[in-house]
Length: 410
Image 1 (cartoon, one colour):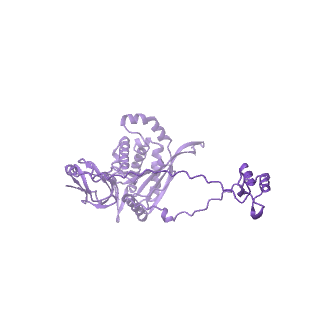
Image 2: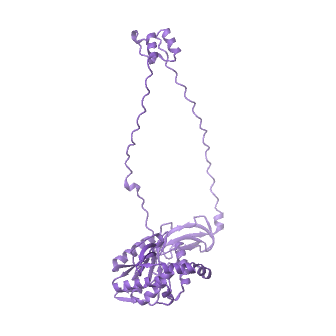
Image 3: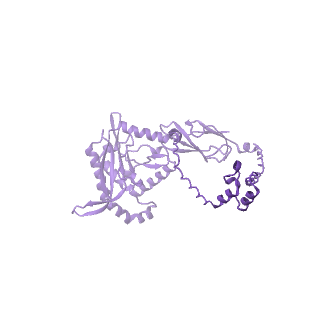
């Protein structure tokens, strides 16, 4: 018997939640085959089978909170599983054939009233009517020939009007509580909620806005995107331009790349940029490290790699920690403007938005339609002054509107 244990989860993480069992009790597994998914505050990770065999017992069902080293289940040998005889199938009773009931007999016409004379009965039969339909004027209510003749000569009564359907009766909906569904927040969602609220409660957060004319970058991208992809094996996106522009601005304004630790400001002389990624489990921010030393091609590759693995839940804990500044792009979802929330303990986050054609006044006074993007930077006003924040955003604007500055490191 081999125990399935919770592995080391990463720095400062001691507990996880069982998100999903990929195998059931009685199923055969191979060594190192993924068998269960665990969700921590930051990532979802897979636990592989420590040995080949059969899942004999699951001790921590889905939704259980488990610590490092806890036993999730047990793997038995395949031979032991083969010795177990399958339970005999339960015979299913054959349902008795359903015999349809015979059609009900046709209701017989009412018997003629023997009190009426034979001439009346004959006349009624010849005209296919029943004397019961005729009001008799004879003795004791008997029907006479005259009653039959009068009945036959009377005009047919107009058919009754069809009833007007009434409006459907209003039925009050069920109680509101019965129409609600309660689902426990995942560990990742709880962590996101805690960190975002912590950022609002801790930092003196303020946001500054600007707009960027994307004409030059879009023209450069259109000119070189095919050759770039052919040479580097990755598409040339807008994110690498903004990463490079942010690194240059961070070098000029080190407070934006700093954080507060107690009563000290920690200035970081490295540039590890977080890139916000939306996943089915929630927002995660993997970190692309040493962006100041990487080419735009390598930055695009790294962003594509961490983004895909974030959506697949394959990121490691190390890839989620240590960022110095974050970039988030709400424009891919159609956002025109927003105020991003700081990713603590960082002091700044840049928000990109949707590119939209807008009429702009050119330096010569001419009005032209230009592809414009609003950008927003939220910052911690405790260590970043307004002048620094505004100028930082202007530096990014200048670099994107004149991308040759990125080549000249300006």
